[in-house]
Image (cartoon, rainbow, N blue to C red):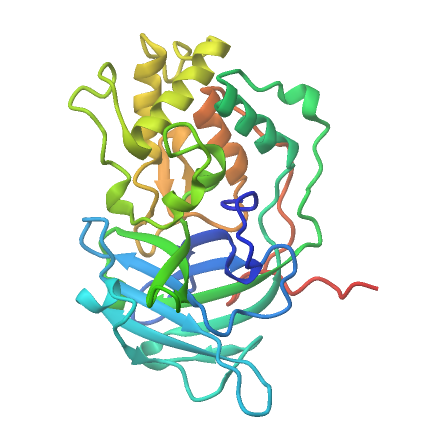
Length: 358
């Protein structure tokens, strides 16, 4: 659950989750799945004028080297299709640039599509694979805002708030000849063209779970759109030379200081296995693991995102990721007690769509 609380007015451009994990390898080597889920509250179509982008950094500088830009044009007969461009180098960072179209003409929505370069595509409705009990992140968000400690037992008992919820999923499975075998960084964005200002506006950015919903990034006020409109390179601006002691600014400083206030209120900052002498020192440790807000993954390996347990490798679709980021906030082991629903063991891996409403 990356973004379920910060949805924009245009729900079609709302990213609920981004994920990255190993697909089914072939004779040529491992394949990596990059995906995003959008429209968690049932937007009827994809945005025909927006951009849905999967961004990959292959050299470790948190700047995208490859962008897969999906658009959803509507034909003269009213049928909506999917088109994906592959942009590389400087073009990957330029929304006015054009790239190589890898999809066949009029590629259908809701079907698996074989694309150029050995890439496989799916864009269509799926059952939301991520599970969460909304009162737990609500309690966490309140604690971060107020500098208190969340009372999770009072919020329970837990049930899956997203059960039988549909999302629109954009999923690519990419061969190793494109990604390479070294670690990659991945994040997803959406954007629309602002005709009044003649420019593209980034609506949302998603990587690790809940980052825009847990933190008030702009000096303690909820200017989440400011964060969503930025790039990962901005995430460490404001980190001081002595992060455990010195004043900090920017997104990094806000994350550190919000977490520090929570663990101070709960008295958990000096608890094992991550014991620190001060709340600020624990907050700095946590901020360094949560930022930049990208998903790091080694192609061909098993994905698991649980930074409190010192594991950050991809982000699968059956992990209790909401619990795993809550651990980072409170410096305590935590689990929702929920279990994942069914998923497929073949592309596009996400379960089939939910049944239509009666």
